[in-house]
Length: 152
Image (tube, rainbow, N blue to C red; front, side, top):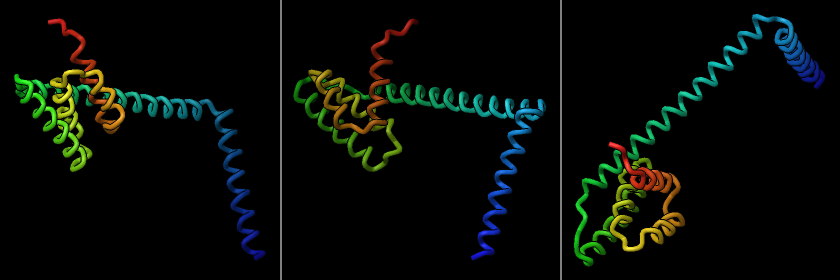
C-alpha cells in the first residue's frame, strides 16, 4: 500500500514537473514558440486541405450521379412513369440496404424517381423524412446543381 502511494506521488510529481517545464519553455523560449506555431499552422492547413478535398470529392460524386440520372431513359406514358417511379424507389432502397457505402447509385435512383413524380416538392419532403442523411445530402446537392443554369 505504502509503495503504491510513493510511486503514485512520484508519477504525479513528474507530470506536474513536465507541465511546469513545458509552460516555462512555451513562455520564454522564442524558438519553442515558433515551433509550436509551425505545428499549429501545419495541422490547420492539413485540415483545410482535407476539407477542400472532401468538398471536391463530393462535387465529383454529385456530377457522376447526375450523369447516371441523365443516362437513364425516362418513360413517356403515365403508367410507365408510375412503374418506373416504383422501380427506382425500390432499387434505391435496396442498393442502400445492401451497400450503405455506395450512396451515389442509390441517390441516382431516388433522383430519377423524383424527376418522374408529378409533385416533386411533396416527394422531396417525404424523402427528407425517410431517406438516410448521406443520400439526402447528395439529393439536395443534385437538385441545387441541376436547378442552377450552367453558363456555356
